[in-house]
Image (tube, rainbow, N blue to C red; front, side, top):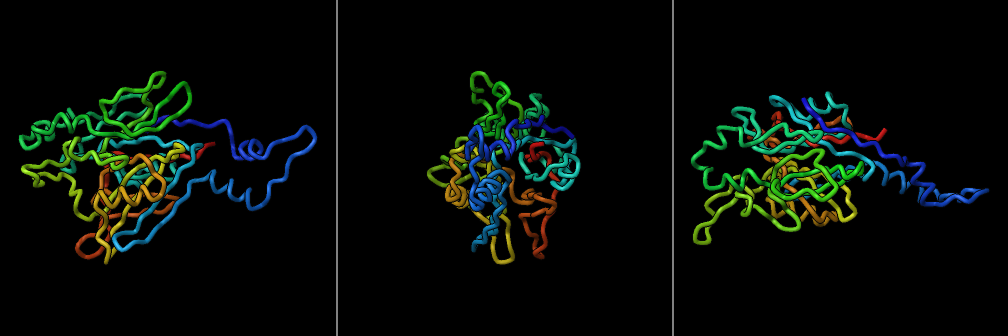
Length: 296
């Protein structure tokens, strides 16, 4: 199994509090208890479950002091397996893969090295049904972590998009389509139309389902989102997922692999998104994940 490098910030919580409250040469300004509590909350990932009529939504907002990296398995693993092997505090399923041959259908870069290329998946590139969309499939959107002179930055961009000057891709994993600021399902070959009628919908974007996604706020925070089915809640369409993310202040968003792959590990507990016909959670192993590691 591979994982990305970790970035360890030099400014801890104490430094953050002192910087914000100020320090005189002979005294330290007292921070009101309610403000101190707010600062502590902002310095840790915030996990928020939200119940709706369509799904149970789990939002994990990640402060800028934490690192989100990518991990991938040679075969397939559950998010709990990934968490155990990496020591992560949170893991969410990420890129697409073919469950029949356990090969990726998404580009994956870890620690600056390309470790998975969908162009090597013969079932993908050799499919006559996918041939008209292959160029789009091989350049689908991805979640990126840049190393910009030692400073990490996150972005969501097409695989073919240029890397910002002075930066290099440290980690990335493909998925798609983009949900915010606009839906790119047609441009990325997930959907197609003929005479105005939908003739292709590779991920059932207009049907309720379990979903996973990653987003960015205007302040640069990373947010993970999972929509889990319940007995009386079938899940979300992609449009509904995008709306829910926008309501939480997310300005840029990428759909991740969903359906039976939908799974999230946080703080020792695993949340699964898809239910089978008997109402039991589907626990399918996956190819790649996003990994959250606490700063040291």
